[in-house]
Length: 419
Image (cartoon, rainbow, N blue to C red; front, side, top):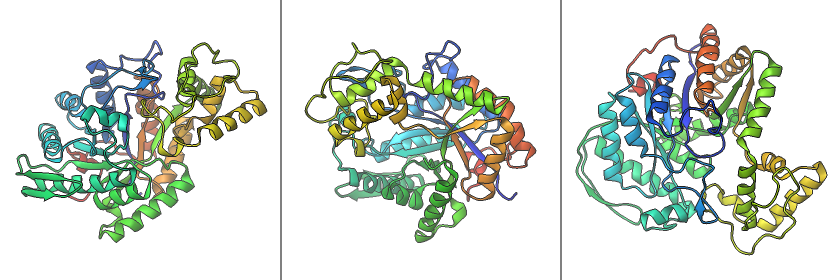
């Protein structure tokens, strides 16, 4: 095959996908967990280790949401520590363009690229969450449809500084006069499936962290993105597409399926299910049994509480209709609170099966250019990562779709991106 599979791991830090309450789970905040994970990935010849980032601790009805990890150091700071403990794995920091400042962030990312020997990456994200913005005295600041316009301008400033060009730009999106300091060329990652996000990726990104894991959706997404690349004068091979995905391995298909069911139940615990509904009801539901029926009280008036940063734009309206629909669904299928939340909460796409089955499926994705690889969202650490490295990677190598050794030292070389 002319194309090889590229793999990363996305350590989000918040959300239910990581079953960090399991006794076998390594500490979620200890630097030793991150070092051990990165070293295991390097043993498995992974391209990159991604760190997610939250700019404000999540809350639930005005209190810290203690079902997630309550805070994490800056991603660039953490990855700088990992740079000293590893020699090949790419180190990708999620950094926000809405509330950072271009010259400052460009310098910090350049510093990570320098001390890691060209292994730095920047996962470009935006937000219109006013609750997050309060930490920066800006509140919501930008309307939803202006986020990507600022992101594009932000990246243009960063690129200019990395290339050694002074910047003097003053408009409604960027206000900066800056001189270059540290030359660099971090690999640019972008996650976003809206038209604005796709266009930002086609203009600037080296790698897209896509949500389109289903084969047919992945084919359509890849075709659309490659058309957009052409519109910006870029070749189809100048961008790598890595859908986010979870993996559940078993020695038999039945074992894998049973493990997947267990993971799903563990990800949505009773307290998590109640906290999820509290966002929509706007009331304390702690007195309800998560394995019992839906609350029999009406939701509070007013807007949904966005403080946890987990409610997407399209779900912030139509609260009454949404809850009515949930009640109908629960009645029709005799669902408890926890069952309903499992049913209606968006799930990360998951590949479930034996190592051989998943290796065959991934080979098809690469062969048909549906994707260039996957960005793995682990459920258990170190278990998920060790299973992939020890069981799945050898199957991929035997099919000729995965490297047997690193052929370069930089993240750009790992991804086989244009120099």
